Image 1: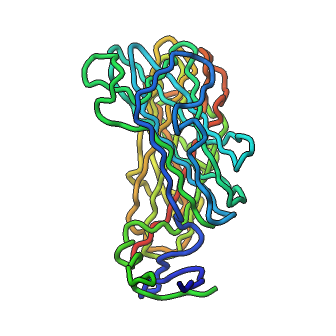
Image 2 (image 1 turned 180 degrees about the vertical axis):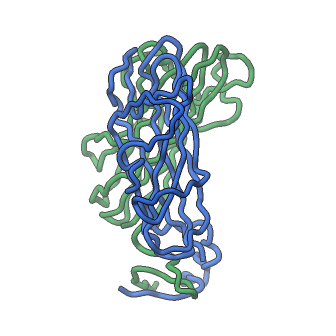
Image 3 (image 1 turned 45 degrees about the horizontal axis):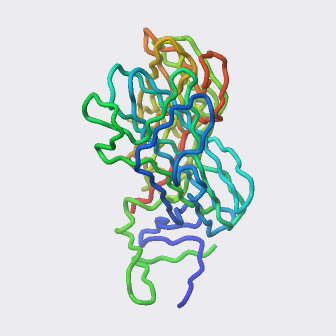
Length: 179
Length: 186
């Protein structure tokens, strides 16, 4: 197989069609669609499954690439209010977890049950100078006064049942951005 | 620097995986981010003000490669809460100089956080808007303003506490930011 090395590709009108810096080189996504509930408040916990167990990974092709981190948290509600904070971490290989500024939060206040709010966040990390596997995880802290978590829980009626009626998922999406 | 001009790129089996038409709406040529992590509070309501730092001073910018490119604007605003509710509106502007960011576009959005008799909450708001072609290969600058609702429009940007507190903390180290992506358009 032949390889053509270049820094950019132009179309026939001389517009840059692809270039090394800024291109999305790869996308990885890790999803969790089970209902997960946690009634502990004001304590930090790893999120369930791939969201918090460190298996959400990306292996950068280029050492100077940046990673565009996107999280989607589907936060269910039960009366009266639910406030949850989500902190974000990465680690390189077997290294230690490092927090970065991709944190997000959700608040719901309602006098009924079953509602859901979709929270999305996106953050572009600095270059991690590695081609080793980079793992990501999210942790959760519930507000001391109303911090129960009902991840992915939703009911189209006034119900607190652990259903995912509309088929949502919470996810981590990782994009490698070449520089 | 070398450049290759072509209409399609094929692998050795003759399978086309890039065409100038096929990536018209999708190719990202660059990504820029401008982040603000301090806690910022203001009690002015129903008056438009620039957001602090890089969010509102007109220095968030992107220099386009092509005059036909479009810009995908993404804003993340972390709306802190104090009893009872906080409602804020955000307008978005672009311009062709840092001091001339005056052209409003439809990237505006709102943030509402409401908890009765408790403080410390936060809600993450994100919006995304694909601007039309601006016909320039120069630098394009962006800023955001905020207008607090007349009845509950205090802003507590990036403020969050996991207890019933109004302290100016960013316990979870969140960021409010602008992300700019240049999108190829032939």
